Image (tube, rainbow, N blue to C red; front, side, top):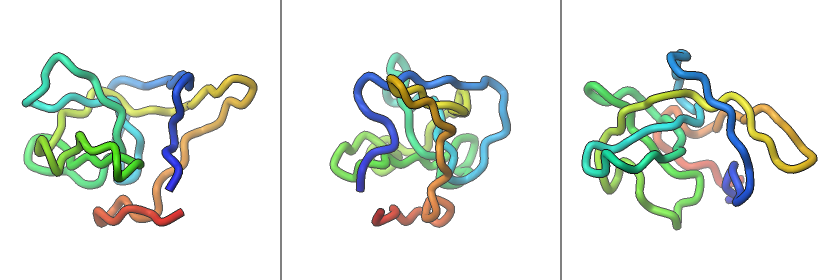
Length: 100
């Protein structure tokens, strides 16, 4: 599976936007409060969201750190020469990773 974001991409986020399962979000984990992460929201979990990485080899998601605090929803990816809206993952709603 190819990650949604690549090195060099710029992401436009909207603070306070409604988050739905499958959205790419800017978040923070309680265990790493100084680090901002970009992950895919799977489901609400307690006071936060269960977050996963599009790259299963990257790690550093809710499996390791528990639910995360979502700060903003990503709305646009700007890849040099190719701005595009971010896709919603088809398997994110139930925690499965897409095999695309």
